[in-house]
Length: 549
Image 1 (spheres, rainbow, N blue to C red):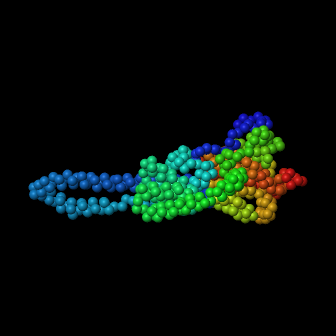
Image 2 (image 1 turned 45 degrees about the horizontal axis):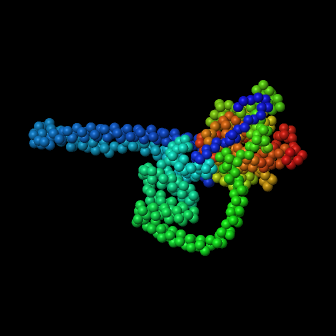
Image 3 (image 1 turned 180 degrees about the horizontal axis):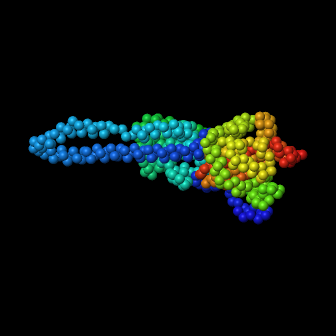
């Protein structure tokens, strides 16, 4: 990043989005990264406790082994000449003593339970363990990432993504989660991966090829692929000819397939005539990208509308906000991310120390915010989670920080006011968010629309005029902020803040600012945002005469 006054912004490939080619939720609750970190340390403590238990058991067994070895030598010698051995009064005494006393002591030693400390620790920690819903949510998050970033199951399983590999049992469990949700597409993908790894000789402690093939045949049948269902069923029966359900399915699939072929012959001529029309309708449908598809494409770094002409209008500059006293000598680094609507990024805007303090303040009280299909009129204000319109699935953990709570929060609020020139006294508290596994915001508006006249009535500060979004961590992959209407994408970069107006100067909502947060693929995403409201801006951002001024 080289700065010269009014320097033209150079082309940026990918426009701030990590694209992972052929590498590598649904509605779920993702565990926030800070909570996941706590779980890691919980597991570390349990491993330490388990090792202590193992050492205690090994010490006990070592005592028993020494006693057994000593008696083994003694009894071997004694039984060669029992009468001669017992003829010695000391040997006779020691035999009585051993059988009467020492074997009893050995019994007590064997019965001693050295697992008490470990079991007690495990019982205490268990209350913080994830439950079945959490495990299912994590599985769905992985499948969400798989879909959004078009990741191959083999790439995920074999560790092409940096990290651990997945075992046969892991793949099987993912397939079962999908199956329980009647998601036969992902059932097939993960069961096929489990079968592939079994075929390669990988051992499994919980599943065999017969079980996997049973799931596979049913999942492809549910997707209308009778021939493949029949193929998997025949392979299953080669391994287990007595499998009752497979034998029944074999006859059923063969019957349905024969019936299907018979119907196809009769309708072949009619279908041929209709084929051209169907293809035309399909092509027409494919030309139209739904918002969901646009969103996922932008997350992958595809479909970004950063044309050379638009790029020529984007600049980097030193910015002093009309010679603001704080920035006359030390202006901030401002970069244009988009021209219309104008989206800017401020570089090195908040120090590492201040960001760490904000995260420290937020961690103890992050709360789970679930995004669903409620309207923006149901936005919850103040210190409770914000519910976004049309935000299906995904979750993040967040907390609200008031200026009075710590000088750093007040300092950041003042910084926002100085840089943007807007009054933050009527703004909402600083929201700090930690995106967990697969955590995301789906496309939404920050402002209340015309059909939601009472969206912010209880605050009495008008609509949300602007948004300030500070990235407090770098993200290895994923986690971009994308604008689905205009085809823009902004990559998270630690210590930078992105700013845009949600309303035109006239007060009308700018629908081009519809945006979303892509799921985090690799890494940890902390952000803080400030929603600035209309009241107090009357002389700072004057009204326009036209609706879109």
